[in-house]
Length: 465
Image 1 (tube, rainbow, N blue to C red):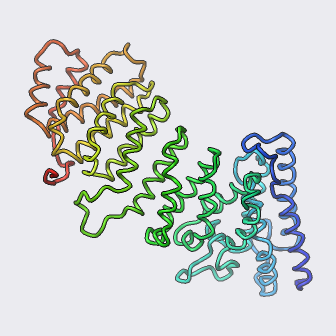
Image 2: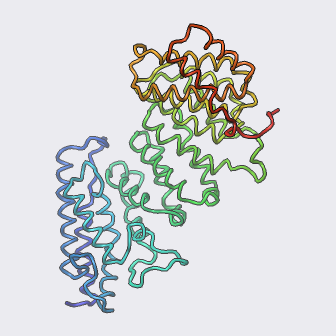
Image 3: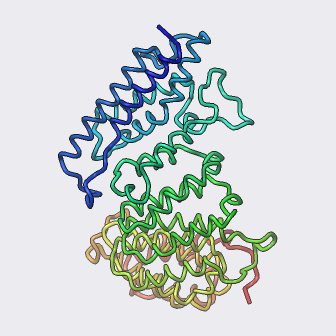
């Protein structure tokens, strides 16, 4: 076989023609979630044909064997393989990424062929993983001796992908967004930071779109970027500020699925942008954007009627309280009002909202215990009402697991309240036990409350002024 430049150019041209011919074409305008049957069928046929053709060209020209390993280790063969892969890997990676996932324009045959072609490329380039194929190795790392892509192929692939994601066409390209996410999700620290100028703009573009699917994808992209980029690097040039400004307006959306992705991402972003100064770990400090987000969330929770959104807010609330610590005292009145309101309403068989709001109450007691005696009477009363409510099997159609979980959480809250304010809570519980009012379920629970009473979990701090 000839290893000359003309042969390399011909093979490269054939592979690029086959690969780009399999790219998912633009979808019909206005159909972002529901594609026509004709479009889906054509995309699947073209994709499968392109994947097979590229695999065939690689195999016939000895780029790799069936076992995805180089056929020969002689220098001429290695140079030939290196030049062909260098010229074609960007387009092939986009083609594989387009059909790798479970998308409308893909099917099982396409997914299998894309995995097979990826294995071929990994074997021929001596890349141990997709991460290394995309990112390569840093200067301090030692790559394999026969590695083809020292710096990875992401730069070359993204240059090709970028032309399909301009402002006028990106919404019509159903695969380009998923290809971008596939590339990004396989990249890790420190390489995400090295390509941050290329990765951040598309993610912000997705978040700013009106379509919920694009917003969700953008939030996932930003979450990955925040997780994989050094915080100091994110603060350079106000990048973390830009991310926060893109996410904060989404707090007013009314989508449970969106909130599930948004709230953790927002918390990660705040951890970067609202860093504490050295030596200020125990200082409440001035109000910042944690307080703004907390205020918006409490306001949303107060007036929210959708059970799906109530669950998402309740699930997230304990994490935010743990981060804010004693500074939640600035919002104590509204916070307790929300907690009490959520404990009064059942949200279904699993009682997710109530269980999570009890977790939020436990965290609140632990973080703000010096001020808890002021509210102990109100909280004890609400907890006892909740305990009485779940004691009746006929009152709520909830599972036995959910009932026991609620019971355990109520007991833990009562223990914490008792430790914070023995003078009020203990006599109240003792009086209820001595009366004939409570049923057996409530009586057994209250008898367990005095046990295992410790305050090791409470922070050692003087009451805030």
